[in-house]
Length: 240
Image (tube, rainbow, N blue to C red):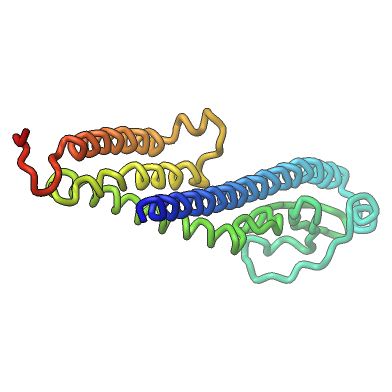
C-alpha cells in the first residue's frame, strides 16, 4: 500500500511538473510574440517618420518655387479640395495625403500657385495596423496574474500556518517551496521583462521570489528535522 501511494504521488508530481513546464513554455512564447509585434510596430513607425521628413522637404521646396497644382501633382502627388469648418484651416484650399508616411499636408493655392502649406500627423499619429496584444496573449496574461495572485496569498497563508500552527506546520512547510517557485515563475513570465539577464537582474520581484524560496527551504528543513525527531505515536519521548 505504501509503495502504491508513493508511486501515485510520484506520478502526480511528474504530471504536474510537465503541465507547469508546458504552461511556462506557452506563456514565454506569447511574451516573445508580443515583443516581436512591438518591435515591428516601432520599425514601421520609424520608417514612416523618415519618409515624412523627406516628403515634408519636397513640399517645402515646392512652396518655395510656388508651383502650380498640375506641377505639384506631377512631382509629389494628387491633391483634393479642402472642405472644413476648422478656423485654423480657413486659408487652406487643398489637402495632400502621403500614404507611406500617413502625413496630411494642407495647401493654399492662390491663382493656381502654391502660396502656403501646413502639415500634421493628426490626433492618432502613425497607425501600423499591428495588433499588439492578441486574444491568446491576453488570456495567457490573465491566467498568469490569477495564478500569481493565488500563489502569493497561498504562500503567505502557509507561512502563517508554519509560524502559528504546530499541528499543520509540516504540511505547510512542504507547500512553501512549491508556492514560492510558482510566484517566481509568475514574476519571471511578466511581459514587462525579457529573459535577457540584464532585464532579469532589474526585476526586483525575482529577488523577492529568491528570498521567498530561501525562507521556504529553511522552514522545510526545520519541519523535516522536527518530524524525524518526534517520538512515535503513543511512546513517551524519554522511553528507553
